[in-house]
Image 1 (cartoon, one colour):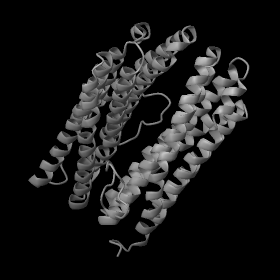
Image 2 (cartoon, rainbow over the protein chains, first blue to last red; image 1 turned 180 degrees about the horizontal axis):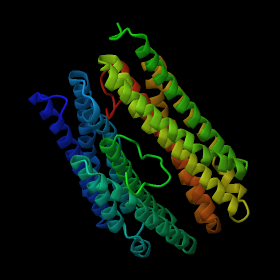
Image 3 (cartoon, each protein chain N blue to C red; image 1 turned 90 degrees about the vertical axis):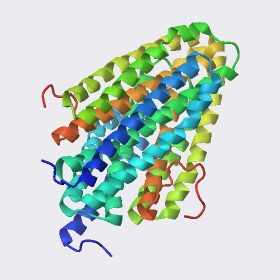
Image 4 (cartoon, helix red, strand yellow; image 1 turned 30 degrees about the vertical axis):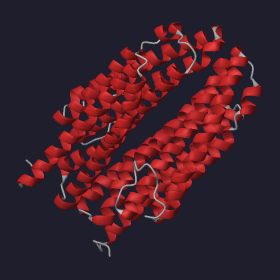
Length: 231
Length: 231
């Protein structure tokens, strides 16, 4: 049962869910475009991606303001209160994912400004695969938020291992590559950073999924050493 | 004028401020100890630091629960509402600073497990200086939170450039060092990561300071391209 039945309030709660999804969709695109700018050596696309971070930031502020308005005017309780505070916390993670897209686009520009390409290092590191994994985690975490779907949120938490392992493998491979061919260190390091940024996108998606579980279940699974199979 | 005069409510608001400070003090210590474990090659201290991250995580959950309770039971408005939502958001940054301390301690353990020390790389990178800068930013950001001091918060935002510049300098120096002596790449990379973790502590402190300005002034300076001199 909703605590409030007035229509304007329900509309604002729907607007909150829609705005979080809009911001999520935007940062998902930002990650995809930044990685494409990198792999296709497209400096113009990298610059557009960096420029578009303003829109992410604008949404961040707008959603926070909407949450504050909802809290101040409607004094929500129980589940609605958790929805709104989850919204407040999720924007922080989405905004940081936007920052990761900017960082990837910056590395893309630096790599383009450098000496001839080292195709060997690039072929060792499947950034589009990592980007797809990270984006899929984010997408599912936000689906779980809107649908208040605990099972889907738990699935996201469990996917984080895969992206962490991929990053560790790449780290070791690229390290060996640098030792072998020190002239490529600068370039290879930048690719390594991009792998790290994508791993952090996975971490942020996991944070969002954990907050969704809290939203639905009313208790925090954050910081448990093992994720319970059944909640 | 407070919106509520009942004593239990005021006590809970004070408890919120005290708990945020306690969590802040703890992560500040965690950063100091992790860097000390690294520079003094003290594996036992590194392990204690990693273990203590549980306490940081417990405080994170406790503060969030206190904020939710305050919102649900007292329906605060205006400034109190902003204080509580700022509390909710600050814990995210403090928890991530705690994670940075854990990461530094992990790198310390890895460095100890590796081949003989490379004193040259270590002497090039003044990690204790960076750690002190980052901790001072965090300390001042939390002081600004408790005192609701906008000037101090603005000062913190402006300090972030110094730590970013230090990290960039170290990055370039260590990159040159790796090219010169590829056998040290593994070790040097770990030092480079620690420098990056400390730079991120500075970013989190800046986020906290920006939220304090919002708390006091009721408008967001997050994402402005330039920080206004007068608010």
